[in-house]
Length: 116
Image 1 (cartoon, rainbow, N blue to C red):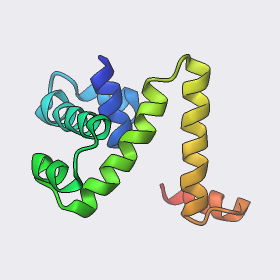
Image 2 (image 1 turned 60 degrees about the vertical axis):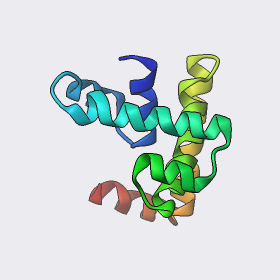
Image 3 (image 1 turned 120 degrees about the vertical axis):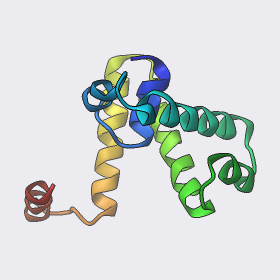
Image 4 (image 1 turned 90 degrees about the vertical axis):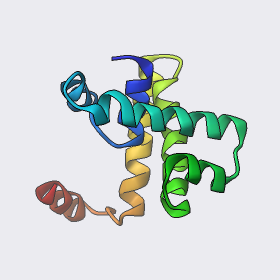
């Protein structure tokens, strides 16, 4: 996989293995998600107005806001200086999401694992 595929996998919450399994057989993974990832990365770096990003993605501003937030985290993982930093960033982000979603007890974590 190329960097853009790793970035797209992170933005759209796919494991690298799952994303890689779809390359070469699915236009969404080969073309569409990498294209959106490029737009999002450029928009973030160049500080485009949210309306412009939404128009480029043909998405609502609410969806666009969520995607821009996701690309920030994705860049922390994909562009980390080394694998250890990448791993730490990914784990930290997972913990932050779990806390935000209310997974504050062992019971809640166990329940979440059962339904996912």
